[in-house]
Length: 247
Image 1 (cartoon, rainbow, N blue to C red):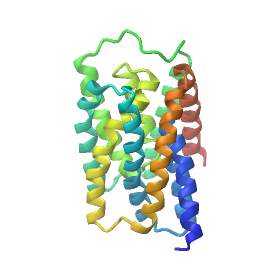
Image 2: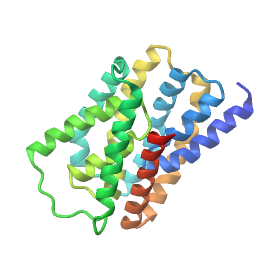
Image 3: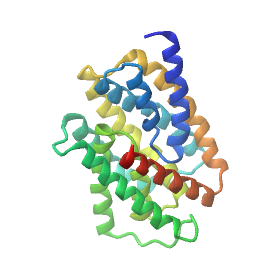
Image 4: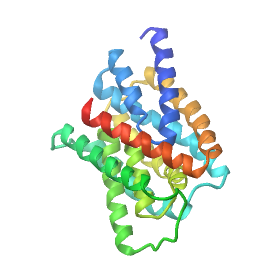
């Protein structure tokens, strides 16, 4: 692959990671770039997925040092996301891929509209129940599967689960998901690596772009007021969902 193509991948990934830290959906930028450059689609998806672990390492470190992660919630959901990632790495989707994407897009639009009509982005008094915990665990498993097989917007879905089932503010949901995701990505990424689906040449610019974008994006999140984070998150989520449905 020409050197200029590697720089294009790095630049696109950096921009995508800035978006991804806030709302997810960064793969809507990186994957089309990889496809246009002639990378094998399955290898592009697998390598891009594994590279995302670098984004979570840098952004997660920034959030952890700033004490912005809800550790009690993250510990409950890390096993679920790992299970989902492993299933996603081993399993082929039986239903039509476009149907799966459309269902996710409709869900994102519904939750985003629901959130936008609320008065603020702060955490409110929240009563956690066993039923919410079980539902959240199940949804995170499905999100882990989706993250491997379809990739884009998995972080968006995760944030909505954290907000509506675990009572986190959008800002706290964005920071907490950075501790939940990397464990699953690393483990399922090893499975993809064993299956020879990782292109190490493009992993380098993808990883570097994710590292830098994750670091810069995390500081942008911390510097942004909670209600602004909420507006940015939901607006971007609706746009991402519309892209899935209509493009």
